[in-house]
Length: 390
Image (cartoon, rainbow, N blue to C red):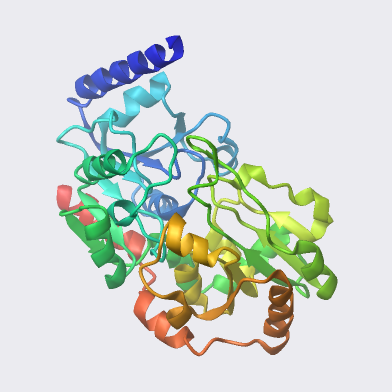
């Protein structure tokens, strides 16, 4: 009870601070945050690096959760610790907020602040108001939807990766503001002319020789497999041992969803399984991988830009479709790769795909529908948002 009262008082204090300090905005101050301050990654990173390199007149600062500072230190990125005093003095004064997830409702922005919501994926699984039965702890359907609508009402701009997502975002988020349908800034990297050079550098950084094949395994999380609110379980169904035995020249990179990334220990498989969940830029991992294996994660839509093969390990497909989330379209008809539910069949499909370099017949249609093929989305955001505010 005392802890809850202390948290309530802290939220009230921050709310009051936002209201007061927000009256004195800094027109060239931008604050960034990715996945609740846990990563230097995703669309906010791409936008930040463009502004850092091309518009040094802007002061760019990141909000970082305590314990997650190392990538920012390594990359010499200016940051403040989330929910601390310097953060409170910085965030309300920022003219621009650039975030990729929802923010707590008590973080009130002033009328002078421009909130750019980049979001973080193209949806296969249902989102927001489209989820029929919310299975998040301490959330009811009505509460969850009310919070989503209050959040989206604060957004001044929402970035969309394609026309398909634009339509879904509007209904799932109850969003009526301006949508920038320009593709995701994080995907600019995949379309750069020096992508091969970058891939070589990333292999060296991870200690993977050029001759080895690489699988990127990037599953999503399960809403109904939780420990407490905000903490989720990860139950492994992926046949690591069998895959490694069948493919002696293979390295597996595991990239888990940020909500479950700390629940998996890759060390039991030696140096042939590398946990890259904290690797700052998943798009760099796309460049070096020979095969993506996912389930319902939106990584499939970005990876399609590489036109490299994918497999879909959906061991719980019926449950996920009928109980956990549900889908916006039938994956059997549209996904650019084989859907596999049995671990033994997955082992065989991996070997066949790597040896024969098989590409699904659905791939080209999937690519044309979901991939915006331009390499300047970050620049476009700056010119549209920051440029128009001057």
